[in-house]
Image 1: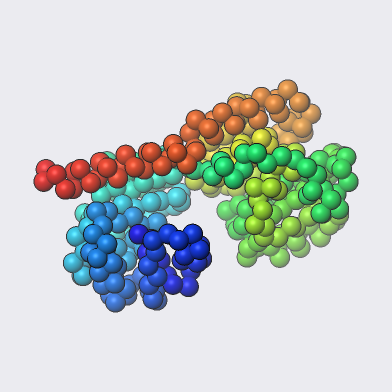
Image 2: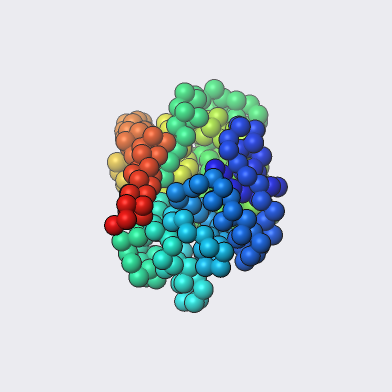
Length: 337
Protein backbone atom coordinates (compact mmCIF):
# COMPACT_ATOMS: atom_id res chain seq x y z
CA UNK A 1 0.00 0.00 0.00
CA UNK A 2 1.39 3.39 -1.03
CA UNK A 3 0.68 6.16 1.49
CA UNK A 4 1.34 9.71 0.26
CA UNK A 5 -0.19 13.22 0.20
CA UNK A 6 -3.36 13.52 -1.87
CA UNK A 7 -2.00 16.38 -3.97
CA UNK A 8 1.34 14.69 -4.79
CA UNK A 9 2.66 13.44 -8.11
CA UNK A 10 3.12 9.99 -6.56
CA UNK A 11 -0.60 9.82 -5.72
CA UNK A 12 -1.49 10.90 -9.25
CA UNK A 13 0.73 8.30 -10.94
CA UNK A 14 -0.23 5.50 -8.54
CA UNK A 15 -3.91 6.21 -9.18
CA UNK A 16 -3.39 6.22 -12.96
CA UNK A 17 -1.66 2.83 -12.73
CA UNK A 18 -4.41 1.35 -10.53
CA UNK A 19 -1.97 0.70 -7.68
CA UNK A 20 -3.09 0.41 -4.07
CA UNK A 21 -2.69 3.95 -2.76
CA UNK A 22 -4.10 6.01 0.10
CA UNK A 23 -3.95 9.78 -0.06
CA UNK A 24 -3.57 11.62 3.23
CA UNK A 25 -4.16 15.26 4.17
CA UNK A 26 -0.52 15.99 4.85
CA UNK A 27 0.35 19.34 6.43
CA UNK A 28 3.43 18.69 8.54
CA UNK A 29 5.83 15.89 9.43
CA UNK A 30 5.15 16.79 13.07
CA UNK A 31 1.35 16.46 12.81
CA UNK A 32 -0.11 14.11 15.42
CA UNK A 33 -3.28 13.91 13.32
CA UNK A 34 -1.30 12.64 10.31
CA UNK A 35 0.70 10.29 12.55
CA UNK A 36 -2.57 8.78 13.82
CA UNK A 37 -3.75 8.43 10.25
CA UNK A 38 -0.56 6.56 9.34
CA UNK A 39 -1.05 4.19 12.26
CA UNK A 40 -4.70 3.51 11.27
CA UNK A 41 -3.80 2.86 7.63
CA UNK A 42 -1.01 0.49 8.69
CA UNK A 43 -3.36 -1.39 11.02
CA UNK A 44 -6.25 -1.57 8.53
CA UNK A 45 -3.92 -2.84 5.80
CA UNK A 46 -2.42 -5.34 8.25
CA UNK A 47 1.06 -4.25 7.20
CA UNK A 48 4.13 -6.16 8.39
CA UNK A 49 6.60 -3.39 7.54
CA UNK A 50 6.46 0.37 6.98
CA UNK A 51 8.96 1.70 4.41
CA UNK A 52 10.04 5.32 4.85
CA UNK A 53 11.46 7.01 1.77
CA UNK A 54 12.43 10.51 2.90
CA UNK A 55 13.22 12.61 5.95
CA UNK A 56 9.64 13.82 6.48
CA UNK A 57 8.16 10.33 6.39
CA UNK A 58 10.96 9.25 8.73
CA UNK A 59 9.93 11.88 11.29
CA UNK A 60 6.25 11.03 10.84
CA UNK A 61 6.91 7.32 11.35
CA UNK A 62 8.85 7.91 14.56
CA UNK A 63 6.11 10.22 15.93
CA UNK A 64 3.44 7.65 15.01
CA UNK A 65 5.40 5.00 16.88
CA UNK A 66 6.17 7.15 19.92
CA UNK A 67 2.82 8.83 20.47
CA UNK A 68 0.18 6.95 18.47
CA UNK A 69 0.92 3.32 19.16
CA UNK A 70 2.37 2.25 15.79
CA UNK A 71 4.09 -1.08 16.51
CA UNK A 72 4.96 -2.10 12.95
CA UNK A 73 8.74 -2.30 12.27
CA UNK A 74 10.05 0.44 9.99
CA UNK A 75 12.76 0.50 7.30
CA UNK A 76 14.31 3.80 6.22
CA UNK A 77 15.76 4.41 2.75
CA UNK A 78 18.66 6.85 2.49
CA UNK A 79 19.96 8.22 -0.83
CA UNK A 80 21.98 11.26 0.29
CA UNK A 81 25.58 11.66 1.41
CA UNK A 82 24.91 14.11 4.19
CA UNK A 83 25.98 14.37 7.81
CA UNK A 84 22.90 14.30 10.04
CA UNK A 85 24.66 16.71 12.41
CA UNK A 86 24.59 16.98 16.17
CA UNK A 87 20.93 18.00 16.46
CA UNK A 88 19.40 15.87 19.24
CA UNK A 89 16.13 15.19 17.40
CA UNK A 90 17.96 14.11 14.23
CA UNK A 91 20.24 11.76 16.14
CA UNK A 92 17.27 10.39 18.08
CA UNK A 93 15.18 9.56 15.03
CA UNK A 94 18.08 7.88 13.20
CA UNK A 95 18.85 5.76 16.25
CA UNK A 96 15.20 5.12 17.11
CA UNK A 97 14.64 1.47 18.02
CA UNK A 98 11.61 1.17 15.72
CA UNK A 99 13.85 1.73 12.67
CA UNK A 100 15.05 -1.83 12.02
CA UNK A 101 17.17 -1.18 8.94
CA UNK A 102 18.51 1.81 7.04
CA UNK A 103 18.84 0.90 3.36
CA UNK A 104 21.55 3.02 1.70
CA UNK A 105 22.22 3.64 -1.96
CA UNK A 106 26.03 3.42 -1.67
CA UNK A 107 28.94 2.83 0.69
CA UNK A 108 29.72 6.56 1.06
CA UNK A 109 26.18 7.06 2.41
CA UNK A 110 26.89 4.37 5.02
CA UNK A 111 30.24 5.95 5.90
CA UNK A 112 28.55 9.28 6.61
CA UNK A 113 25.75 7.75 8.68
CA UNK A 114 28.14 5.66 10.77
CA UNK A 115 29.31 8.88 12.42
CA UNK A 116 25.93 9.15 14.18
CA UNK A 117 24.36 5.67 14.15
CA UNK A 118 25.06 3.65 17.30
CA UNK A 119 24.14 0.28 15.80
CA UNK A 120 25.96 0.19 12.47
CA UNK A 121 24.52 -3.26 11.75
CA UNK A 122 21.29 -1.45 10.89
CA UNK A 123 22.99 -0.04 7.79
CA UNK A 124 22.87 -1.98 4.52
CA UNK A 125 23.77 -1.08 0.92
CA UNK A 126 21.67 -2.06 -2.10
CA UNK A 127 22.93 0.31 -4.84
CA UNK A 128 21.14 2.36 -7.49
CA UNK A 129 18.48 1.10 -9.83
CA UNK A 130 17.71 1.92 -13.46
CA UNK A 131 14.54 1.13 -15.37
CA UNK A 132 16.51 -0.59 -18.12
CA UNK A 133 13.33 -1.38 -20.07
CA UNK A 134 12.85 2.33 -20.59
CA UNK A 135 16.35 3.03 -21.90
CA UNK A 136 17.53 -0.11 -23.66
CA UNK A 137 16.30 -0.18 -27.23
CA UNK A 138 16.52 3.58 -27.71
CA UNK A 139 19.04 4.64 -30.36
CA UNK A 140 20.57 7.81 -31.73
CA UNK A 141 18.33 9.16 -34.48
CA UNK A 142 19.56 12.75 -34.74
CA UNK A 143 16.26 14.17 -33.48
CA UNK A 144 17.96 16.28 -30.80
CA UNK A 145 20.30 17.79 -33.40
CA UNK A 146 17.29 18.73 -35.50
CA UNK A 147 15.13 19.94 -32.62
CA UNK A 148 17.85 22.14 -31.12
CA UNK A 149 19.27 23.33 -34.45
CA UNK A 150 22.65 21.65 -33.99
CA UNK A 151 24.52 20.75 -37.22
CA UNK A 152 24.69 16.97 -37.66
CA UNK A 153 28.50 17.04 -37.91
CA UNK A 154 28.80 18.51 -34.39
CA UNK A 155 29.16 16.30 -31.33
CA UNK A 156 26.68 16.73 -28.49
CA UNK A 157 28.15 16.80 -25.00
CA UNK A 158 25.28 16.65 -22.56
CA UNK A 159 24.23 16.71 -18.94
CA UNK A 160 20.95 15.93 -17.18
CA UNK A 161 20.60 17.34 -13.67
CA UNK A 162 18.84 19.94 -11.60
CA UNK A 163 20.51 23.35 -11.40
CA UNK A 164 21.67 22.99 -7.81
CA UNK A 165 24.92 23.85 -6.09
CA UNK A 166 26.01 20.24 -5.63
CA UNK A 167 25.78 19.55 -9.39
CA UNK A 168 28.52 22.16 -9.97
CA UNK A 169 27.37 23.54 -13.31
CA UNK A 170 29.99 26.26 -12.85
CA UNK A 171 32.78 23.75 -13.43
CA UNK A 172 30.75 22.30 -16.31
CA UNK A 173 30.58 25.69 -18.06
CA UNK A 174 34.25 26.40 -17.34
CA UNK A 175 35.14 23.06 -18.94
CA UNK A 176 32.98 23.99 -21.95
CA UNK A 177 34.86 27.29 -22.23
CA UNK A 178 38.17 25.40 -22.31
CA UNK A 179 36.94 22.89 -24.90
CA UNK A 180 35.59 25.71 -27.08
CA UNK A 181 38.97 27.47 -26.91
CA UNK A 182 40.61 24.25 -28.06
CA UNK A 183 38.34 24.17 -31.11
CA UNK A 184 36.33 21.05 -30.28
CA UNK A 185 33.55 20.72 -32.85
CA UNK A 186 30.69 20.27 -30.39
CA UNK A 187 27.64 21.85 -28.83
CA UNK A 188 26.81 21.50 -25.15
CA UNK A 189 23.31 20.62 -23.96
CA UNK A 190 22.03 21.09 -20.42
CA UNK A 191 18.75 19.37 -19.57
CA UNK A 192 17.03 20.30 -16.32
CA UNK A 193 15.76 23.20 -14.27
CA UNK A 194 16.39 24.60 -10.81
CA UNK A 195 17.18 27.57 -8.61
CA UNK A 196 20.63 28.24 -10.12
CA UNK A 197 19.53 28.15 -13.75
CA UNK A 198 19.50 31.94 -14.11
CA UNK A 199 22.95 32.21 -12.56
CA UNK A 200 24.36 29.60 -14.95
CA UNK A 201 22.79 31.35 -17.94
CA UNK A 202 24.41 34.60 -16.83
CA UNK A 203 27.76 32.81 -16.58
CA UNK A 204 27.36 31.50 -20.13
CA UNK A 205 26.61 35.02 -21.40
CA UNK A 206 29.59 36.49 -19.53
CA UNK A 207 31.86 33.99 -21.28
CA UNK A 208 30.35 34.58 -24.71
CA UNK A 209 29.17 30.98 -25.01
CA UNK A 210 25.51 31.65 -25.84
CA UNK A 211 25.85 29.94 -29.24
CA UNK A 212 27.65 26.94 -27.78
CA UNK A 213 25.51 26.02 -24.75
CA UNK A 214 21.89 24.99 -25.17
CA UNK A 215 19.51 25.11 -22.20
CA UNK A 216 16.93 22.46 -23.05
CA UNK A 217 14.84 22.82 -19.88
CA UNK A 218 12.87 20.07 -18.23
CA UNK A 219 12.27 17.03 -20.45
CA UNK A 220 10.04 14.03 -19.91
CA UNK A 221 11.81 12.09 -22.67
CA UNK A 222 15.23 11.69 -21.04
CA UNK A 223 15.33 8.07 -22.21
CA UNK A 224 15.28 9.39 -25.78
CA UNK A 225 17.60 12.36 -25.20
CA UNK A 226 20.58 10.65 -23.57
CA UNK A 227 21.20 8.30 -26.54
CA UNK A 228 21.58 11.46 -28.67
CA UNK A 229 24.64 12.51 -26.63
CA UNK A 230 28.11 11.64 -27.90
CA UNK A 231 29.40 12.03 -24.36
CA UNK A 232 27.82 12.56 -20.94
CA UNK A 233 29.74 15.12 -18.86
CA UNK A 234 28.91 14.99 -15.14
CA UNK A 235 30.61 17.46 -12.81
CA UNK A 236 28.57 16.86 -9.63
CA UNK A 237 30.79 17.23 -6.56
CA UNK A 238 28.89 15.12 -4.02
CA UNK A 239 26.70 12.41 -5.51
CA UNK A 240 25.51 9.32 -3.68
CA UNK A 241 26.00 7.27 -6.87
CA UNK A 242 24.92 9.13 -9.99
CA UNK A 243 21.86 7.45 -11.45
CA UNK A 244 22.29 9.37 -14.71
CA UNK A 245 25.64 7.64 -15.17
CA UNK A 246 23.87 4.29 -15.08
CA UNK A 247 21.25 5.66 -17.48
CA UNK A 248 24.10 6.65 -19.80
CA UNK A 249 25.40 3.08 -19.61
CA UNK A 250 21.93 1.83 -20.57
CA UNK A 251 21.93 4.31 -23.47
CA UNK A 252 25.45 3.20 -24.52
CA UNK A 253 26.89 6.70 -24.10
CA UNK A 254 30.47 7.15 -22.75
CA UNK A 255 30.86 9.16 -19.54
CA UNK A 256 33.33 11.59 -17.97
CA UNK A 257 32.42 12.29 -14.33
CA UNK A 258 33.82 13.77 -11.13
CA UNK A 259 35.75 11.63 -8.69
CA UNK A 260 33.29 12.54 -5.94
CA UNK A 261 31.08 10.88 -3.35
CA UNK A 262 29.73 7.56 -4.54
CA UNK A 263 30.42 8.17 -8.24
CA UNK A 264 33.54 5.93 -8.21
CA UNK A 265 31.33 3.06 -6.99
CA UNK A 266 29.48 3.07 -10.33
CA UNK A 267 32.11 4.53 -12.67
CA UNK A 268 35.33 2.53 -12.61
CA UNK A 269 38.10 4.81 -13.91
CA UNK A 270 39.58 3.64 -17.22
CA UNK A 271 37.18 0.71 -17.16
CA UNK A 272 33.60 2.01 -17.56
CA UNK A 273 34.49 5.67 -18.14
CA UNK A 274 36.86 8.42 -17.03
CA UNK A 275 37.00 10.27 -13.72
CA UNK A 276 38.21 13.87 -13.39
CA UNK A 277 39.23 15.96 -10.41
CA UNK A 278 36.33 17.69 -8.68
CA UNK A 279 36.08 21.37 -9.60
CA UNK A 280 38.93 21.20 -12.14
CA UNK A 281 37.63 22.30 -15.58
CA UNK A 282 40.99 21.69 -17.26
CA UNK A 283 41.03 18.07 -16.11
CA UNK A 284 37.45 17.61 -17.31
CA UNK A 285 38.31 19.15 -20.69
CA UNK A 286 41.38 16.91 -20.99
CA UNK A 287 39.33 13.79 -20.23
CA UNK A 288 36.60 14.78 -22.69
CA UNK A 289 39.17 15.28 -25.46
CA UNK A 290 40.97 12.07 -24.57
CA UNK A 291 37.77 10.06 -24.79
CA UNK A 292 36.32 11.67 -27.92
CA UNK A 293 39.62 11.20 -29.73
CA UNK A 294 39.78 7.46 -29.06
CA UNK A 295 37.10 5.31 -30.64
CA UNK A 296 38.58 2.16 -29.09
CA UNK A 297 38.24 3.60 -25.56
CA UNK A 298 34.70 4.76 -26.29
CA UNK A 299 33.61 1.28 -27.34
CA UNK A 300 35.38 -0.32 -24.39
CA UNK A 301 33.73 1.99 -21.84
CA UNK A 302 30.33 1.67 -23.51
CA UNK A 303 30.42 -2.13 -23.35
CA UNK A 304 31.95 -2.33 -19.85
CA UNK A 305 29.46 0.25 -18.57
CA UNK A 306 26.53 -1.64 -20.04
CA UNK A 307 27.78 -4.90 -18.51
CA UNK A 308 28.23 -3.20 -15.11
CA UNK A 309 24.66 -1.90 -15.25
CA UNK A 310 23.16 -5.26 -16.17
CA UNK A 311 25.14 -7.05 -13.44
CA UNK A 312 24.41 -4.59 -10.61
CA UNK A 313 21.57 -2.14 -11.14
CA UNK A 314 18.53 -3.57 -12.91
CA UNK A 315 15.13 -3.50 -11.23
CA UNK A 316 15.26 -7.27 -10.76
CA UNK A 317 18.65 -7.20 -9.05
CA UNK A 318 17.90 -4.29 -6.71
CA UNK A 319 14.37 -5.57 -6.11
CA UNK A 320 15.72 -8.94 -4.99
CA UNK A 321 18.20 -7.27 -2.64
CA UNK A 322 15.44 -5.20 -1.04
CA UNK A 323 13.14 -8.22 -0.84
CA UNK A 324 15.85 -10.15 1.03
CA UNK A 325 16.14 -7.31 3.56
CA UNK A 326 12.37 -7.19 4.05
CA UNK A 327 12.25 -10.94 4.60
CA UNK A 328 15.05 -10.76 7.16
CA UNK A 329 13.19 -8.07 9.10
CA UNK A 330 9.87 -9.93 8.96
CA UNK A 331 11.44 -13.21 10.11
CA UNK A 332 13.31 -11.52 12.96
CA UNK A 333 10.46 -9.30 14.13
CA UNK A 334 7.67 -11.85 13.96
CA UNK A 335 9.44 -15.09 14.84
CA UNK A 336 9.38 -14.30 18.55
CA UNK A 337 13.16 -14.48 18.69
